[in-house]
Length: 616
Image (tube, rainbow, N blue to C red; front, side):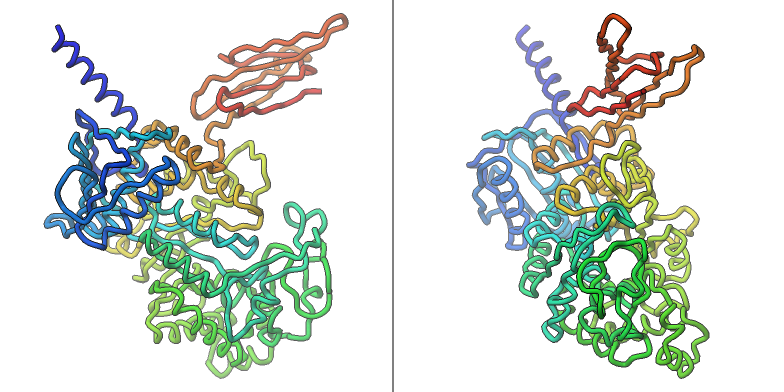
């Protein structure tokens, strides 16, 4: 009888752990076994060489912040504890693969590379109980895993709104915890220049600041007239790059050219085709302006502006080469992002120097002039040992020979580049622009669009129309966070979470094995982790859709409620007759017919999330 009871308890224990194992991205192979392992402050992290110390340090930093204790790190390859081993697998063709085994004697993580071992640490973190405890019991599991795509990225625009270096590091931690490995840092634009260039101090002293910002959604409801800006010193840049490297994340800098140059031109007007034309003179008439209206100024609103780098002026290229010379040593990344997007040609068409450049180089139009511009900078950057990447507009007028394409205006540019045998990073705005709305009931200002978590999850970065050979040129994907309407760190977190979880699984795993219903089952535990991190994630996944339509009975309306998570909903109505006021609150089971003058509120029964619609 006692044996039967023990067997029953063992089954219950295994079942409980199976329910608790919730890993995103889903591993290629996962088996939950009998048993468990307990981690406490005396459990050692055992490393076989110094290359694994980064992974050990990251685990310790996480344990310290969220559980309040550190583990001893020992350089030995035997014993009970958490063993980290990095070695080349004989039969593992995938780069950065790892094997994970946990049982009653400990945890063993074997990485094919140091990043592979680090990804095993992220899996271990996801096996930890969410609640803060002194002893952490994890399930016994066997995992074999590897990423499908080598480039798995997130972007952050720090030009429209600026964020302190401490938060940039936190952002990088978020990437690491989702097994992402590229941080695309958008450092220059019309609204601000954010990186110190010692040869050109006005870039940050002038171009790093603006005299105001429009209020609300474009074109705005006035201007806040607040002197706004900031920049990162080169020492701070190095600090961030090292911080990312310790998490096996490559930082890719973006220096915009030839468009989105307003901040640089504000600092050095001679970079413009028309240095004497004040910025205010070509500013959108429906956008409010603050401060000095003479001369060149850093832009105070959003959009695309005609004042771009002069392609006919040799000083433009000297300036950009000088900038590149200072930026490149700060970033070990072989990739250098040159922007290349949204470059109006109006000034070039009117500029004598640009027209002369076209004539001298037999360029038939301004698109070819942009191609000349990009290819000239590419040759300079290539000579310094770097490869350029640019937004898909660099395809126009002819693509630079070795350039990578970042396809954002949809998938067409990426498909075209892949067919031309150019390397591609897919980042179509209709799927992975995280500044887009993620809820039909959005309660904050966004740039528009609609990219909910399910849409992100179901996106395949490798278009089906490519042949197997062409598909090899799709090197990965990333999501972008433009910050016109992202003013603070809370809004960053609201914008990226939980969509980053969907992105992580989309870029990591085999698309043939993706399973949205299974992801939905794992998502609630991921949201608990976000709570643990005190991250201001969006609850849009739990949003309720309320449809109100006229009922067949005169003076009545019908409410139909739905929510994607199929969670319980309640319906509350307040109504007044000639002699009484009363209230009813019922669990929603089917469409409800009420008097059209009734004030009603529908609530989803999770964390107080509610939609209120009043009928007059």
